[in-house]
Image (cartoon, rainbow over all chains, first blue to last red; front, side, top):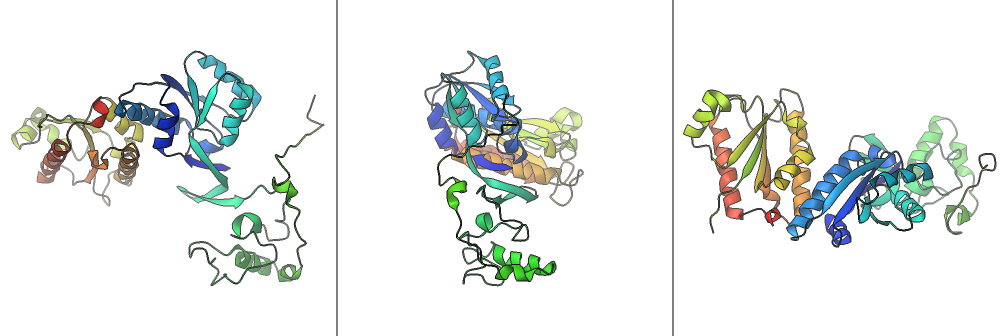
Length: 222
Length: 137
């Protein structure tokens, strides 16, 4: 999922300081799963916005809404049900949602309530870790299903650096050396020889270094 | 400047059970502060972050939660969950530039123990010292 976390309240209050009424818009997609921008978090945020504005001697009305997702046109259209009820939308979606509303609603000011952070998973309640960098050229079939692009601090492609100690990365003792894990996992499948194969220089153009990426599926367009 | 604070207490059904004896008169006789509005909940684990924030929106100068001991909650982890939510509200208050101490969590034994009254007095004096809620504008 896309993992995000709420922005500091000082930033959010600054965004809405001139508003009289805002639509706090939750997203029931990834950010609900990572407890950053679902309906519950939108309710909390609306309350904090009201309190923050009250402290500043201002009043603000909040309407709370939610969309199935904020990354598809058909769901964005549902914003029209709150027409006239807000000066601005405070979106608790990831950055995709904020961009999508901005793209599709020319007259609507949209503010991001979250900092969108990474593609990750949750192996432990309340904890999320980065697992994928969305680089557009997956090598997981060569690395035992563990991603060196996202999970190696240097995104190395040919084994660990000299900072790998006892299975940990030199940047922090809590961080695993994913190359040690790749080695151990390949060994458990009797595929250690894969470690000897030299990975070629990567073409990073698929990772966004060639500009914003786009996928067109002719079989789905009408 | 002295003022009469409004404090909201969310208390676990079990912890506050004896507090309601004789319609609360026993509590009053023991010196439980009149500034505290006691709201009994089936389990403090049911108290949401929004519940605590709403108390501030409704005019409370301070809010606190009293639940079972951490290792003896009737609903196993209810009071531990409550403590986490209180901590989240404390962090949020501080983000807004408000004293985090305006919200507190206490784990107390069940029944009417002296600690229940003591913690009420402690909360009352803390909030009096802090003054009116900055959300009262």
